[in-house]
Length: 343
Image (cartoon, rainbow, N blue to C red; front, side, top):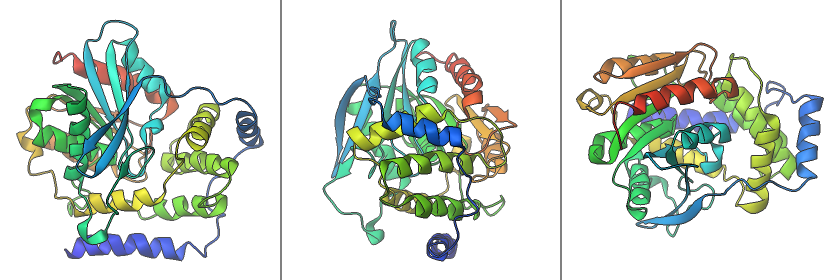
């Protein structure tokens, strides 16, 4: 497909171009931020994972998951699906806590190629997996835990996978929440994905090292979050991000940046979901930031139009991230959407 080749060529062109480029265009950390990172690295790493952990087998893939129980009786299950290149720990802790405090057990997991998830077969471009293949990882987790139905929440690429679960496995889906995502990233009727963010993300990698020090990799995580915020304003909880990153680097496998390339190809080679979304009868919530620098806001609007009776939450001061200042509003809106069904 010509459009597919165009986007893949663009990805590699941008990557190659910025290998020799200046890193001056990326955000800089303040003295306070740098001091916070140093303090985190010089103190004991707090326990980040406290739930029940395990692996779900899906053909050649071994998918790591964590199931976090609520402090009171379980009233339902929530499955969280992260974005491109991200692992389970990328979810904001307070977002998860808001869900568990409401009585839901929460499952988060490492995507293929990230965290503790692994495969016995080497990834090959000609035999690359699709988003539908990645959706079966989530189903494998539900099967492993003997969970019949779950509320499915996905961000960015995770939103695309969540849509596919709702389409292909409606009997396993209580509700669908798609955040800063799209039914078709190559939709000719909509603005394309930004070609400005990738160079900045690559610059952050170059500046702080592909396999840099722990301090450098933590800095990169925080800087890349600022990049994804785009023109949105707001503070970042640097301490929490640094603690999670330090834990990932010290206690887990760290960050596999190549996974983003594999996930990007899965996005590009997958079919549009816009044909099937109008047939959904599952309660759906679409959340999108109006200042999203990666996935234009029009993609969220179109999904809202396509899916019958879909609810929406449009956030003015939000980019392509889950902003700390908006977690409470996002959580409350999602929990309200759950009331349309009982799991």
